[in-house]
Length: 229
Image 1 (cartoon, rainbow, N blue to C red):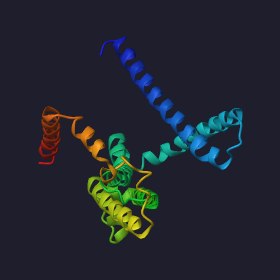
Image 2 (cartoon, rainbow, N blue to C red):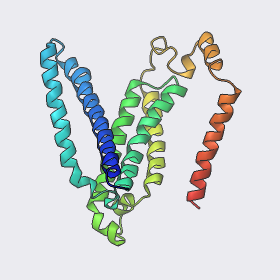
Image 3 (cartoon, rainbow, N blue to C red):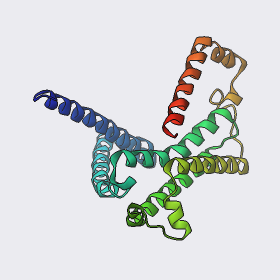
Image 4 (cartoon, rainbow, N blue to C red):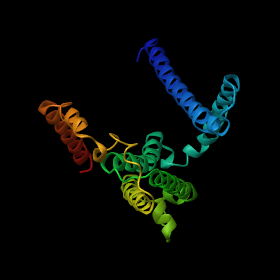
């Protein structure tokens, strides 16, 4: 790119990055301050909550800086590979909870919480094993044992395994706990939708929307099949 345009592009990238980071910091500090701290101390003044929010933001930034050296040890030090790996480990338990919560009314809050916690434990074990065996993975040296096998499972296959495991945990814990009050979750899942809600849902899309959605799914599958040989 010519001189000047390079600076413009770099400025745009930095502005986009700053915007994204600002959104993340603001969201995290709000979640901690309102959903956690305020629940523990409901009598805190607005001024005190703002102060706690600032402290939470500082801690999040500090943790992000501390995490930077660890990023180099995941995915072979390649940023794109790192993002793919981490997203593949974070998404399955969250997806399992949301998907089951929509299609199955029997899902309980305990089932969702245990699913997310177990997913977090698996994520930490996977990242920890990747970091521990980093030298062997980069050099292509095979190490006998379950730990090394666990560390070298393809990230896409790991995501599938974590999703199946998360679905199993969510269903198992939900069946072992008291069923939710269906009146309180009316309309939040297909099983609790009233006849009127079902009618509104059916009228919210037409054949064109359905055809375009199927075409989009077909395009995504075609791209995946093409690049996977």
